[in-house]
Length: 325
Image (cartoon, rainbow, N blue to C red):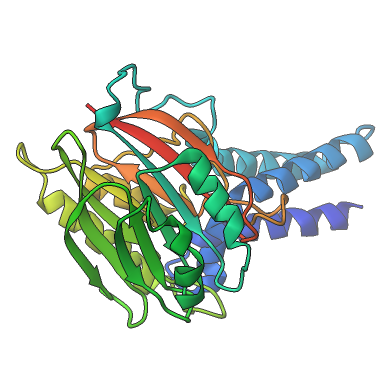
């Protein structure tokens, strides 16, 4: 039994400390994702040791201490994304609807054919902006029923899992699409013009993840995210526009890259102090983490934030409504 707990504790130590290695390889960076699951495994390990060896804890005391240290380390990363932490974005008390913007961001899963589920959610919640990721020409055609309500659109259909579409109820200007870091991995940048005349600079991203089937390293994803962060930071000033960033970033909220993105850009995450809002994987409740994000500048307060019902994709849609102060 002692050998069993030594092995389990050693494995938990390995996957906890692996992200500290100076490597961008997916076998290292992937362990930044399941911190919630690792916390659960550590707790099980501690409970089993406490239950099975309660009569003779002495020889196992060192293992218990090691596991408690691992638990504290993992909780330190995910704690801001629990309701126990302090919020960084205040709830809006304003009733001014003309200064609100509502966004649905969703990775539709290119092979998914349940477009009617997404259309029903859009008709129910009526966001100002709908951002679809992994959307190809089939999805572009399937979402045509939304065209009357969303006359302003940006289409970038691709069959490589990185197509993007933007549907808007409000006018868009200064629209640019770019494959900034990787060929075939685009992003959309534009200004959204609210009905009260105010403008918001918007960036929509879907960088490739570090994985054995995509990029072996996280380098390209990190370059795209941190490059945009520096671009946003360089434009900050008294006359700068409010900023909104959204998309499937293929990075979890608590990773060092996402934390660096927020620190460099000066943007805020409305999930802090409210929850993780795990949007992936929709079919496996035991393997979920927050891959879909919305960040914004300090110009906004939060009206609502919610994870919507499944649409046949491996991602849940994320619905956010914010108020421009």
